[in-house]
Image (cartoon, rainbow, N blue to C red; front, side, top):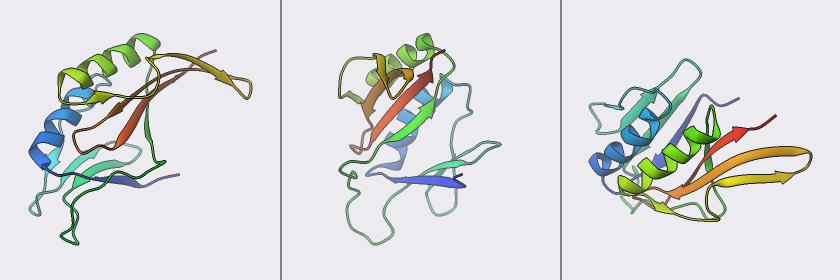
Length: 126
């Protein structure tokens, strides 16, 4: 459905270190910095990117926005959360765990990245 997702960052190197660490949990290689100073994580199914806002204004978090990353297991979600906190993220929402609703059972964890963007790791349970 999506070709790419780009998030604003205050400091590309700080955000890159954070995302390199948490995305490594899922087996993704480190991000690549382009000639404009943006950071790109290239996958077979899409691109995740970080950029200083091009309008010159500070990066701001989207109130009500969350970017979710797919995880292979609850253990992977827990490790993602732990690594995120150890690399400059802050926990938000409830602690990592099972959430149920609309006939689904999910294992979720939430973090705020160094720029304040809300992100999530999600494992769909049987």
